[in-house]
Image (cartoon, rainbow, N blue to C red):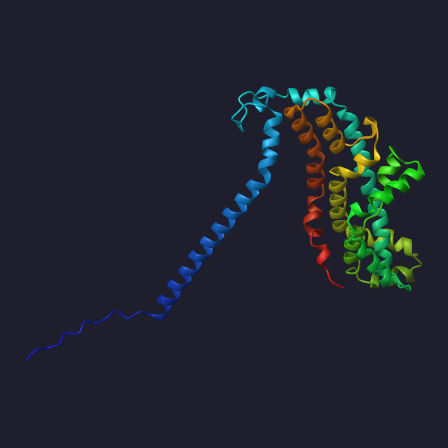
Length: 299
């Protein structure tokens, strides 16, 4: 008589199964994080590679720059281009003009944009919403569309080749008004009412209450304005007619087209021109991260 042997199977506890599931989930999350960080690192490298190439080129002698095949890493390190940029090109004048242009536009725009944003966000008057919609409509109009009539207007004022011609047309910005308005509407209106009960007028409320509470928004907008106008090429190129009034982007571009191209010298100028933007960003970094998403605030 044959007997059937039964082999006892080890019992699997529910706790062990849950533990294995959690382990697999952690491994999947770890792999996902590794892939994510790897993708971010590759994308960051692709983005900063042109700047690395520019910086390394500025540290090479011209003979190495034009060598074929090209090499990224310099064989001979030199600062000759950084020394020559001040004498071969009127770089100091270009730099001063750019500081006046970008700094002046930034300061004036912050004041006028914040004043307009305060009016459309905190005051009640007929046509307020229509004015704000008109400001939003300006965001959809490319600058090139208004370039010719704006140039004619500047010409009639006699502002060609002047700081006024550079700065005044950029004195306010629809994006800046929209961004600050979105932040101002988040400030409690009880602060305005309390200030009015104490006898404060509207400008006092704007200057002493709203602006101190909007440092993150103002710092973020200042970085945007300064960066955009510092790098602006088209408007200074059209308005300025002499070397003494040219800004860095326009001046370096014209130098490249009028003389024998010295790539190391131009890369040195571009690296020096980039330095103020980096300084401005790190100076406002503590507010920049807080204010970068202010445009998404809803009423």
